[in-house]
Figure 1 (cartoon, rainbow, N blue to C red):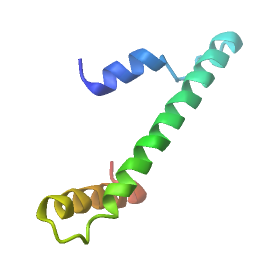
Figure 2: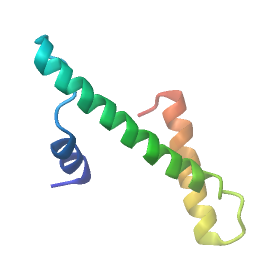
Figure 3: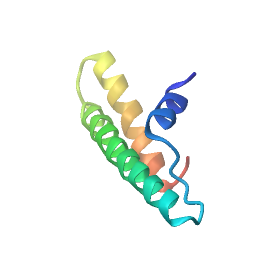
Amino acid sequence: MNYYEITTKLIGPVDPVGETNEDNRRFENLRLMVDLIDELLRDVNYVAGCRNRVEYSVKRAGIFAHEFLKRLERGDW
């Protein structure tokens, strides 16, 4: 099982199906997932801010994170 599968299993389905009670539960799952994504993106953004550091390993991580955020912004995912 990968991280995506584990996360979606813990949070539950998020796609609406057209039945009010079930969609209310799935909407709450969606809110939880968005909150998690927000926290993860904050972490990635912090690392992206390290792209100008002099230490090779820190700079490498910062560049990688920055490139990911640029792709996300462009919609290249």
